[in-house]
Each structure stands twice: as structure tokens, then as C-alpha cells.
Length: 232
Image 1 (tube, rainbow, N blue to C red):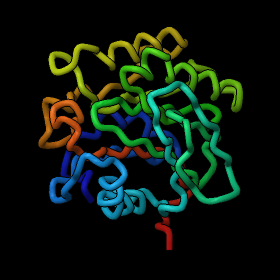
Image 2: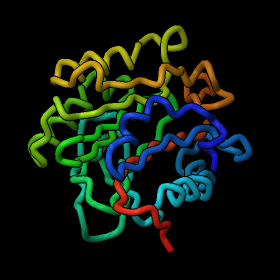
Image 3: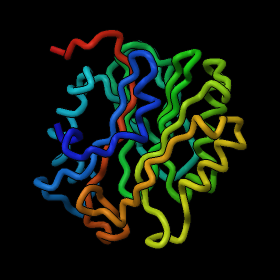
């Protein structure tokens, strides 16, 4: 698998330690040629991304993805009923954490924020770039989880993916996100950040800014499986 080659998984350790939670962050795939067209690039990356999805025990039809328009809309994904799709107008996704539902977010400098409720089992995955962070989209996700699933911020484990950082970007996204998460009531020890800058490591990650738009997308995945059986 692609991830096994990176060795950079520590920021997800606490999330993945929760019962039956499956999570990963798919980095750059060097052998795949990308372009400035986002959807063309995602189509080229999909076979490799499908392998990662299956490696977690899911099938591509289980995957729900946000359209990502740099806003603050968070969509609630149903526990059952229908195959996964791209949710228009959303930058965040939350679910009850039922078996077989997989959340996905694409990033290339923006942060993917993983949220895991250790008490109710609810899950959230958020795309938070500069605009989304300014609009506190991650706080909207926590509010949605509280309203829909009764999530208490004190029970949430959160992980922030690799993203662009100073000095390669004028805004410190992880710092702002942590400030918002602490303000929402999440204990500091339950917030993990990868510490890696996508712009500084284009050998491992895609960077929209450094590569001037001619770039691919990493894929953040978060779901829950009740067993380790791979889909057929």
C-alpha cells in the first residue's frame, strides 16, 4: 500500500486506537501524472485511492466525499441507505459511526481534520483551508456532532493532517485550528497535529501553492468497520 511507504502515521495513532475506527492519509503518488484540472486529476488518482479504501476494509461505494467549496457547511451522512457520493456544497462530513460508512476529504495544502467521539462513536472529517478556518468550519462540525449525536467535546479525539505552514504560507492553519478546538472544549491532550508542512515536502505531499496549481490531491479517510474482512 502507498501509506506503508511513508512512515508518517503518528498523528493518527490516537484516532486509530479507538475501537474499530479505520483512518488513513493517502500522500503523494509519484508515478501518477497530474494536471491543473482537479477532476481529471482525481480520476487519474482514483485507482490508487480505491486500493487504500479497500485496504481499510471498505469498498469505493461506501465512500462519501465533500464537494469542498471553502465554506462552513457540514453535512450529516446517513447511517444506512444508499451508496456514497460527493456531497454538494459541503466542506465537512459527520456520521454516527455506523459500520461501513467511510468519509473522505481531498487536500493539497489545506488541513484535513479528523474527529472521533470516544463515547458515542460518532465521526467527523473536515476540509479546513484558510477560508474554512476563518469561518470556523471545524467548530461547525463539532456543533453538528453535538446536536445530531450528543457528542461532548471532552470526549473527542482530533487529528490535524499535514498542511502548508509558515514560512511557506502566511497563515498558521494548525495553530488557528488548535485554538478553535480548545475554545470548543476539547482537551489539549486530545488534539494531535502531524507537524509536517506540505509545501516543504513535495516529495511526499502535493502542494497547490508550491506547484502553482499543477498538482494532485491527498485523500483523508475515516470510518468504522465492525470486522477486518475485506469487501468482495
